[in-house]
Image 1 (cartoon, rainbow, N blue to C red):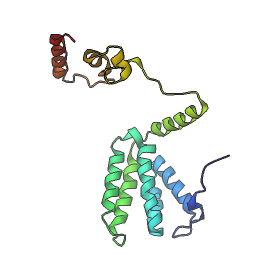
Image 2: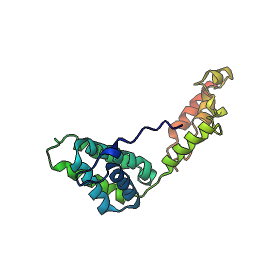
Image 3: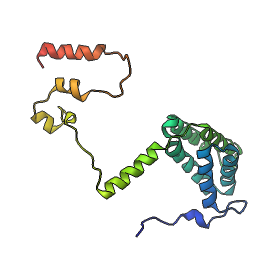
Image 4: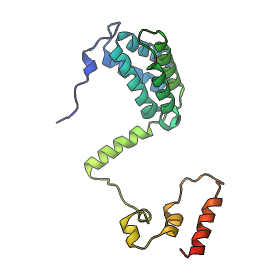
Length: 190
């Protein structure tokens, strides 16, 4: 038994009579493949069809910036959100709105793509549902910030030596203040 709801775009035709669900699907696949011209045409079709489909275009583009571009271009989500905020300042009667959609699609098509976040969330959903994966609390998390860590007598030194470890750590980062904190703990005996 499925809990998925029926796609509301199945029953909608675009301005030029295309099935809206197919336009939406094609847009994402064309962006994934970097096919800029057709992706722009599909986005334009969505914009000229209706305000609702234009709004949905922006929702899809925001998702694509994370789902398909991901860490291939880590700032893509910020760029898309910024473009979306800008387009929201223009009345729908303004032709400039189309410019933002075209720019967003061109940008996403040109980005290096990485679907790992989407793959990882799908793995998590399936693994948790199957009972094959559960979160774990590592011992180093039981520090002065938890009841168990306090009960074990773990104080500031334990935190600075174990709880504050970084990976990956910036090479050659400034450790001056970390060392000063450790020196102060040595002076206090703890």
